[in-house]
Image 1: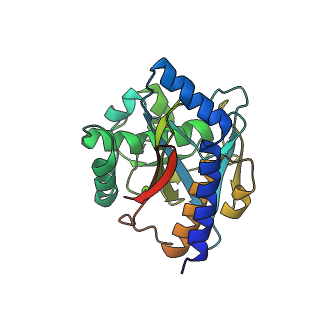
Image 2 (image 1 turned 45 degrees about the horizontal axis):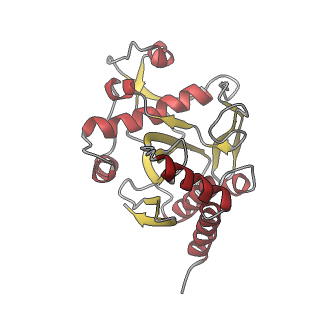
Length: 263
Protein backbone atom coordinates (compact mmCIF):
# COMPACT_ATOMS: atom_id res chain seq x y z
CA UNK A 1 0.00 0.00 0.00
CA UNK A 2 1.42 3.38 -0.97
CA UNK A 3 1.51 6.18 1.56
CA UNK A 4 0.27 9.73 1.10
CA UNK A 5 3.90 10.90 1.06
CA UNK A 6 4.74 8.48 -1.76
CA UNK A 7 1.68 9.61 -3.70
CA UNK A 8 2.73 13.26 -3.43
CA UNK A 9 6.23 12.49 -4.68
CA UNK A 10 4.81 10.39 -7.51
CA UNK A 11 2.46 13.20 -8.54
CA UNK A 12 5.31 15.70 -8.76
CA UNK A 13 7.52 13.22 -10.62
CA UNK A 14 4.68 12.78 -13.12
CA UNK A 15 4.68 16.57 -13.69
CA UNK A 16 8.40 16.49 -14.46
CA UNK A 17 7.96 13.52 -16.78
CA UNK A 18 5.21 15.41 -18.64
CA UNK A 19 7.55 18.36 -19.08
CA UNK A 20 10.41 16.14 -20.30
CA UNK A 21 8.07 14.42 -22.77
CA UNK A 22 6.60 17.67 -24.11
CA UNK A 23 7.02 18.58 -27.77
CA UNK A 24 9.35 21.56 -27.10
CA UNK A 25 11.67 19.40 -24.99
CA UNK A 26 11.69 16.63 -27.61
CA UNK A 27 12.59 19.16 -30.32
CA UNK A 28 15.36 20.58 -28.13
CA UNK A 29 16.87 17.14 -27.58
CA UNK A 30 16.64 16.28 -31.28
CA UNK A 31 18.38 19.53 -32.19
CA UNK A 32 21.15 18.85 -29.67
CA UNK A 33 21.63 15.31 -31.01
CA UNK A 34 21.77 16.56 -34.58
CA UNK A 35 24.43 19.13 -33.70
CA UNK A 36 26.52 16.54 -31.88
CA UNK A 37 26.88 18.91 -28.92
CA UNK A 38 27.20 17.34 -25.49
CA UNK A 39 26.66 19.59 -22.48
CA UNK A 40 28.28 18.26 -19.32
CA UNK A 41 26.36 19.15 -16.15
CA UNK A 42 28.18 21.65 -13.95
CA UNK A 43 28.31 21.00 -10.21
CA UNK A 44 26.00 23.31 -8.28
CA UNK A 45 24.83 23.66 -4.68
CA UNK A 46 21.52 24.89 -3.28
CA UNK A 47 20.65 25.51 0.35
CA UNK A 48 17.30 25.38 2.13
CA UNK A 49 17.49 27.53 5.26
CA UNK A 50 14.84 26.69 7.87
CA UNK A 51 13.50 28.53 10.88
CA UNK A 52 10.80 27.61 13.38
CA UNK A 53 9.99 24.65 15.58
CA UNK A 54 9.63 21.15 14.09
CA UNK A 55 6.26 20.92 12.39
CA UNK A 56 6.06 24.71 11.99
CA UNK A 57 9.06 25.42 9.76
CA UNK A 58 9.49 28.18 7.23
CA UNK A 59 12.16 28.37 4.53
CA UNK A 60 13.83 31.11 2.50
CA UNK A 61 12.97 31.52 -1.17
CA UNK A 62 13.38 34.31 -3.69
CA UNK A 63 12.44 35.13 -7.27
CA UNK A 64 15.13 34.87 -9.93
CA UNK A 65 15.64 38.07 -11.87
CA UNK A 66 13.45 37.98 -14.97
CA UNK A 67 16.40 39.02 -17.16
CA UNK A 68 18.39 35.87 -16.33
CA UNK A 69 18.63 33.15 -18.98
CA UNK A 70 18.19 30.21 -16.58
CA UNK A 71 14.76 29.90 -14.89
CA UNK A 72 13.87 33.63 -15.15
CA UNK A 73 11.13 34.74 -12.75
CA UNK A 74 10.95 31.41 -10.89
CA UNK A 75 10.79 31.16 -7.11
CA UNK A 76 13.85 29.20 -5.98
CA UNK A 77 16.09 28.42 -3.02
CA UNK A 78 19.43 30.28 -2.80
CA UNK A 79 22.10 28.50 -4.79
CA UNK A 80 24.32 28.38 -7.84
CA UNK A 81 27.22 26.69 -9.55
CA UNK A 82 30.46 25.78 -7.78
CA UNK A 83 33.21 28.32 -8.41
CA UNK A 84 36.85 27.36 -8.83
CA UNK A 85 37.77 29.30 -5.69
CA UNK A 86 35.34 27.30 -3.53
CA UNK A 87 37.80 24.41 -3.40
CA UNK A 88 40.37 26.51 -1.50
CA UNK A 89 38.22 28.38 1.04
CA UNK A 90 39.05 27.20 4.59
CA UNK A 91 36.15 26.10 6.78
CA UNK A 92 35.82 26.38 10.55
CA UNK A 93 34.57 22.80 10.62
CA UNK A 94 34.11 20.12 7.95
CA UNK A 95 31.04 18.43 6.55
CA UNK A 96 29.72 15.66 8.75
CA UNK A 97 31.34 12.32 7.79
CA UNK A 98 27.97 10.84 6.75
CA UNK A 99 27.26 13.78 4.43
CA UNK A 100 30.78 13.81 2.99
CA UNK A 101 30.60 10.06 2.33
CA UNK A 102 27.38 10.43 0.31
CA UNK A 103 28.95 13.16 -1.79
CA UNK A 104 32.14 11.21 -2.45
CA UNK A 105 30.22 8.05 -3.33
CA UNK A 106 27.98 9.79 -5.84
CA UNK A 107 29.83 12.72 -7.40
CA UNK A 108 30.54 12.32 -11.10
CA UNK A 109 34.05 11.63 -12.34
CA UNK A 110 36.86 10.93 -9.87
CA UNK A 111 35.99 13.15 -6.91
CA UNK A 112 38.21 13.81 -3.93
CA UNK A 113 37.74 15.45 -0.55
CA UNK A 114 38.11 18.88 -2.15
CA UNK A 115 35.12 18.24 -4.43
CA UNK A 116 32.82 17.51 -1.50
CA UNK A 117 34.21 20.48 0.46
CA UNK A 118 33.61 22.81 -2.52
CA UNK A 119 29.91 21.87 -2.70
CA UNK A 120 29.34 22.82 0.94
CA UNK A 121 31.34 26.02 0.56
CA UNK A 122 29.41 26.95 -2.60
CA UNK A 123 26.09 26.52 -0.77
CA UNK A 124 27.16 28.94 1.99
CA UNK A 125 28.70 31.43 -0.46
CA UNK A 126 25.51 31.53 -2.53
CA UNK A 127 23.39 31.89 0.62
CA UNK A 128 25.33 34.98 1.62
CA UNK A 129 25.51 36.47 -1.86
CA UNK A 130 21.77 36.10 -2.43
CA UNK A 131 20.31 36.70 1.06
CA UNK A 132 23.02 38.24 3.28
CA UNK A 133 22.88 35.35 5.78
CA UNK A 134 26.13 33.97 7.19
CA UNK A 135 26.73 30.51 8.66
CA UNK A 136 30.10 30.48 10.36
CA UNK A 137 32.14 30.11 13.53
CA UNK A 138 34.94 32.19 15.01
CA UNK A 139 38.21 31.15 13.44
CA UNK A 140 41.75 32.30 12.74
CA UNK A 141 41.54 30.79 9.24
CA UNK A 142 39.85 33.61 7.35
CA UNK A 143 39.63 33.79 3.58
CA UNK A 144 41.03 36.92 1.95
CA UNK A 145 38.86 36.44 -1.15
CA UNK A 146 36.39 39.31 -1.79
CA UNK A 147 33.47 36.85 -1.81
CA UNK A 148 34.16 36.15 1.88
CA UNK A 149 34.75 39.72 3.06
CA UNK A 150 31.59 39.75 5.23
CA UNK A 151 32.70 36.54 6.96
CA UNK A 152 36.17 37.99 7.62
CA UNK A 153 34.65 41.21 9.02
CA UNK A 154 32.80 39.10 11.59
CA UNK A 155 35.92 37.01 12.30
CA UNK A 156 34.13 33.96 10.91
CA UNK A 157 35.03 31.05 8.68
CA UNK A 158 32.18 29.14 6.98
CA UNK A 159 30.75 26.31 9.10
CA UNK A 160 29.80 23.13 7.21
CA UNK A 161 28.88 21.00 10.21
CA UNK A 162 25.15 21.83 10.19
CA UNK A 163 24.60 21.06 6.49
CA UNK A 164 22.51 17.98 5.70
CA UNK A 165 22.03 16.48 2.26
CA UNK A 166 18.37 16.63 1.18
CA UNK A 167 18.67 15.52 -2.44
CA UNK A 168 20.25 15.88 -5.84
CA UNK A 169 18.88 16.67 -9.31
CA UNK A 170 20.63 16.52 -12.68
CA UNK A 171 19.28 18.62 -15.54
CA UNK A 172 18.13 16.44 -18.48
CA UNK A 173 20.30 16.30 -21.59
CA UNK A 174 19.36 18.32 -24.64
CA UNK A 175 19.37 21.75 -22.98
CA UNK A 176 22.02 24.45 -23.24
CA UNK A 177 22.59 24.77 -19.49
CA UNK A 178 22.87 21.64 -17.38
CA UNK A 179 23.56 21.39 -13.66
CA UNK A 180 24.27 18.57 -11.23
CA UNK A 181 22.66 20.26 -8.24
CA UNK A 182 23.06 19.13 -4.65
CA UNK A 183 20.38 20.36 -2.24
CA UNK A 184 21.47 20.99 1.35
CA UNK A 185 19.21 21.82 4.28
CA UNK A 186 20.04 23.46 7.61
CA UNK A 187 18.24 25.13 10.50
CA UNK A 188 18.89 28.59 11.89
CA UNK A 189 21.10 28.28 14.97
CA UNK A 190 23.53 30.24 17.13
CA UNK A 191 26.16 30.21 14.37
CA UNK A 192 23.97 32.06 11.86
CA UNK A 193 24.35 35.82 11.40
CA UNK A 194 21.25 37.46 9.95
CA UNK A 195 21.54 40.82 8.17
CA UNK A 196 19.77 43.82 9.62
CA UNK A 197 16.29 43.93 8.12
CA UNK A 198 16.24 40.16 7.54
CA UNK A 199 17.71 39.98 4.03
CA UNK A 200 20.20 41.67 1.74
CA UNK A 201 18.73 40.97 -1.73
CA UNK A 202 21.04 40.54 -4.71
CA UNK A 203 20.32 41.49 -8.28
CA UNK A 204 20.00 37.79 -9.07
CA UNK A 205 17.53 36.76 -6.35
CA UNK A 206 14.72 39.19 -5.49
CA UNK A 207 11.52 39.28 -3.42
CA UNK A 208 13.12 37.20 -0.66
CA UNK A 209 10.69 35.86 1.91
CA UNK A 210 10.07 33.17 4.50
CA UNK A 211 7.45 30.64 3.37
CA UNK A 212 6.03 27.44 4.77
CA UNK A 213 6.78 24.47 2.50
CA UNK A 214 3.06 24.24 1.72
CA UNK A 215 2.89 27.90 0.67
CA UNK A 216 6.04 27.47 -1.41
CA UNK A 217 4.37 24.61 -3.30
CA UNK A 218 1.70 27.00 -4.60
CA UNK A 219 4.18 29.79 -5.42
CA UNK A 220 5.66 30.33 -8.89
CA UNK A 221 7.96 27.31 -8.66
CA UNK A 222 9.25 25.02 -11.39
CA UNK A 223 8.72 21.27 -11.54
CA UNK A 224 11.95 20.12 -9.90
CA UNK A 225 11.58 22.70 -7.11
CA UNK A 226 8.17 21.23 -6.22
CA UNK A 227 9.67 17.74 -6.19
CA UNK A 228 12.33 18.90 -3.73
CA UNK A 229 9.71 20.67 -1.60
CA UNK A 230 7.75 17.43 -1.29
CA UNK A 231 10.96 15.61 -0.34
CA UNK A 232 11.59 18.32 2.27
CA UNK A 233 8.12 18.01 3.80
CA UNK A 234 8.47 14.23 4.00
CA UNK A 235 11.96 14.53 5.50
CA UNK A 236 10.84 17.01 8.16
CA UNK A 237 7.95 14.75 9.12
CA UNK A 238 9.98 11.53 9.26
CA UNK A 239 13.34 12.97 10.36
CA UNK A 240 12.76 16.27 12.21
CA UNK A 241 16.24 16.15 13.75
CA UNK A 242 17.83 15.92 10.29
CA UNK A 243 19.98 12.84 10.78
CA UNK A 244 23.12 13.30 8.60
CA UNK A 245 22.96 9.60 7.61
CA UNK A 246 19.38 9.81 6.31
CA UNK A 247 19.05 8.56 2.69
CA UNK A 248 18.79 11.33 0.09
CA UNK A 249 17.09 10.96 -3.33
CA UNK A 250 18.86 11.55 -6.62
CA UNK A 251 16.79 12.59 -9.63
CA UNK A 252 18.06 12.09 -13.16
CA UNK A 253 16.75 11.42 -16.65
CA UNK A 254 17.62 8.15 -18.38
CA UNK A 255 16.35 7.55 -21.93
CA UNK A 256 13.82 10.37 -21.54
CA UNK A 257 12.45 8.89 -18.30
CA UNK A 258 12.68 10.70 -14.95
CA UNK A 259 14.17 8.43 -12.27
CA UNK A 260 14.49 8.57 -8.48
CA UNK A 261 17.07 6.57 -6.56
CA UNK A 262 18.28 6.83 -3.00
CA UNK A 263 21.87 7.67 -2.13
